[in-house]
Image 1 (cartoon, one colour):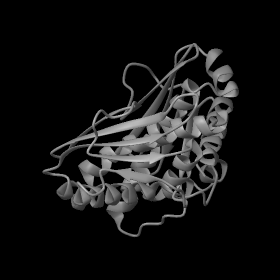
Image 2 (cartoon, rainbow, N blue to C red):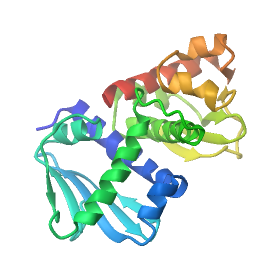
Image 3 (tube, one colour):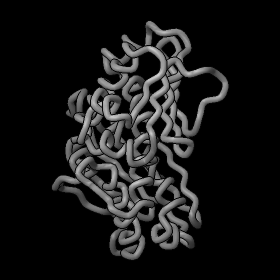
Length: 258
């Protein structure tokens, strides 16, 4: 049976990492072209006595929808015998698995693997040189991390749930110049993540990065947030105490995925 940590990591991979494939489908020209005519469902499922961990991706000619339950009659399904195996797979590590439907849809498999390789840009050691890829890495990372923070709370991490339970409605906003935005809403133990700029309430904490090149050193773990502020890459408006605590949870999530 999977440990609580393994189940929490699986939740992050399925519900926070996989959804940013939508960004790749929209903004990566090569990947968008590969899926422009694809209509298919692709599943990921890890078996566990406490309940299978699963996600279903439904491709429809360049559009993508996700659900977090096993696919019904998927065209392809990645099957793992342990949750830890699936976590290793998404972390880019060797892991045993088998693919249902491989012989029927080999071309679909090739396209899906290209998409999954594209997600590897999230890894701190991936250092793209192309300006568009660098922007994409920053955008995908902040989309992923705000969603992951919400899922970390919903997954029942004791310290995160304690932290959110004591707060009234608060918005934690991240922006990169005027181009990229992502936010986390906290209210009495509940959390919600979103993209862009939250307009209905002033941020309680606002992390403002000077631009893509200012955000990349933090995204790639070259500097921490304190050093980023010293170097002028980052300005933090609002409560420094809660901003620091949020940063600590971000680090925990990154460690959970490795």
